[in-house]
Image (tube, rainbow, N blue to C red; front, side, top):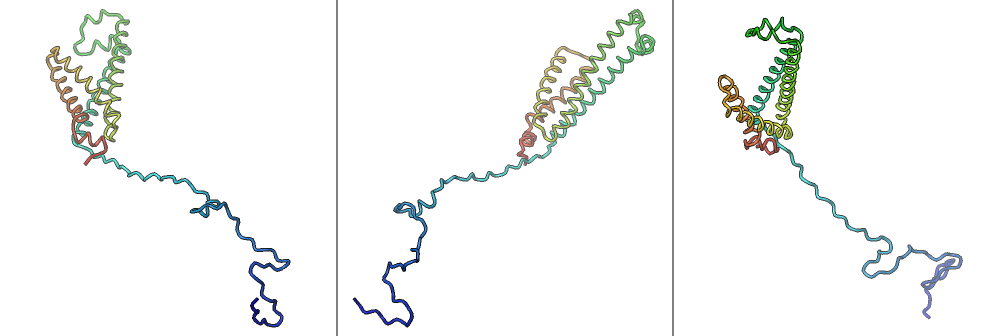
Length: 219
């Protein structure tokens, strides 16, 4: 055994490695998990499954731009709607005249035929009811057209397709009337209506710029 180096007075002799003095607890290290080659910390931190994060989607901004045909179509729709409402109010006023005034009122109207004076009040009441039905039709259809004509400029695709369907039905109806030969001033009136409906239908269904506007891809 090699000789120990001299120690200063009062100090304990050096202890061999691994020796623990009496009454002192041995040092305790952190708990060790099961040994796993290549992954020394597998017992302490379990592996977390990788979850892919969704990529942020680009924000699509719709671009709407009023077109000339859309403005013209709105003007025609609103104009026809106002005309319908005025006609409905006229029919309603005529029905009220029949109910309230009776023969005395209608006798003063231009073109009154004396033969009408022979009819009874029941016939006049029935005629007034018919006039009210006609007035309600014109008023309701006029208000619907007015609402559609206003909100279609937002633009609203729902209003647009309602207008397209109604215009197609109106065009078919007007063409049918013209083929029957209504004649006179009514032919001119129905031709004006037909041209207006055709312009609205082209604007809502076929005009490229207006279609891009409703799709939100206006340039």
